[in-house]
Length: 461
Image (cartoon, rainbow, N blue to C red; front, side, top):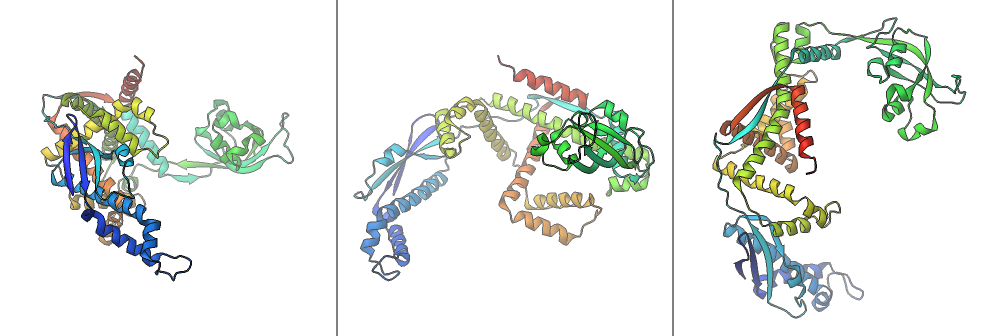
């Protein structure tokens, strides 16, 4: 076997692979013998079909298959041995391959096009400035969050008369245009959450009612959601057009959530792994959690801005024609990705590819690694948090280890965890090495600014 690399451009090359019979004959003979053992043909006992007939029937296809296996292995072994940094995958020259005479040739030459990875000359420094939003949490948001938590952990009571935040359970009966119950019309018993209704007039009607009170409701106006309406009426969404929109609702029960007291019992339910003693500490904890939650969105924006800045600074050139062909070849069985789409969206793809190259460059330059122990501890912490939500804040070590083993046995899931931890470390690196142009805003201001920013970016020139 002989492989020769010929550069065809600054970032492209062709690999010429020459195969001799000794490179593939042994594998072809073995494959044919295996087929002979399995072959069944009229007039011959199973496994006793003459080799000549096996070769006549299967020789060409077996030769092509085994040669292809040798080709693929040899090309990737060559790339690894020569330490060639490639983009995508080697692409075979299909036109050249069509000229092969599988019936008569013994020596073969195949051509593969490869894209070469450009050299990255970029380092992180505080000379590179990137916008960074710091999200402050308003007291009003802390108040709203605490009120929601008090309701979530509150107790259910049954008052006589309804108020605006109550839940009503009752019977729905379909009525005609004069509000008379339709005898064979739709009937169902279900809940109505007053506070979540979309129509203020309906909310007003349902506030101050008690058991056995009745009123007619326009459910289309009250709910404004077909899925919710179908659930309320106990039917499929597709069946809604078979029924009317007006229903007599007879209250059977009024339910109210009595908010939990702000005490250590609530603090422990919300934060089982914390020692929170009073309301001041609880508010501080909630503010911290909200800040982390909101800051995660701001960090996504920061990373996007950092990527744009670094891609621009790196000034990377790519072998565009090769990458376009590679994209089309790779997705030829995917009807959602067409050559036209590849052409139209290539700029976006190219930027993504450039960032992958830059990120891998930084991972090597700054020796970023994710260890098995880090993955294991990350998974254990995730499991602890999940179980704490179900009132089991201290799972035993065996339970945690079993969870880690289960995830580790699934290569796709394990890769996701490694990628997630690499993302965290790359984010920390960017924050540490780049100059952050900080801007403090509350979350609503951040959302408004992002909405305006991306709306303007999407405007046609």
